[in-house]
Length: 331
Image (cartoon, rainbow, N blue to C red; front, side, top):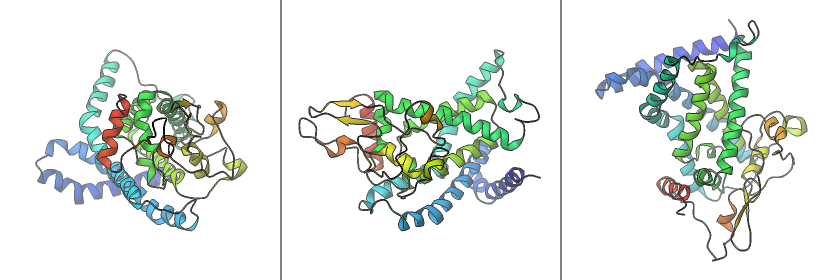
């Protein structure tokens, strides 16, 4: 049995134990026996989230304290980011998706199959090679990361989408908790696209969870308040905290503001989620190894022509509401 199979078996056993010991009694106690299957799937995401939180607290937080880019001065903003992380990693966001969006996606995919549109299984394109566990996982990761790169470009390119995504960039004190600081609608849009891609290329549920979990942990590292680059070679192989911090840099990762208050899109840099090769191929890479810029959005720190600075909200509900207003051009 290879390492991936052993991990899968161990994880499945842990999921079953957690479901039977804690989740299932709660489901039946609330009279929600009809949602047992969804609860079992939610337990999978809950277990993944708990493991991720353990890594963040035990590994990334101590590293931030030892090798920080900047001192933490706004602890309230960090606490809000922790709340976002708990919502996403402990299954609350996934449960909402299961109950609202997933039935719609299942209906769409079911209708496509009835219409004769088959699922294309990417891991069967080269029998004997691509059906090897680690090779198929690598292929799926590459496909998802390529799609994620272009999703990220869209979040910065289209003004309505930037209205939502700007919340993520408005954090002036970026830490390992910042990855999930996103507008909920922004998260829904991204997840729907990735789920549809996964369905289209035949990713199994276990493979999908593994890919998402690995990607999220990498994103926790990328957002960490950590003075860390992977060197001239490593920076071109995997997104580092330095590489991604430039994407969040004021006036670098997205926009600039002219003296008259006009915002001009500069094209941005370092959009890749895992593999910087996409930024290299499409001309959006910045590999300046020793550059650690302040993070945020220019209109937070520089007044416009009327002397106003933009407020992106201080708490969860304020940030969500302001994001919706930005999306429709009301803020």
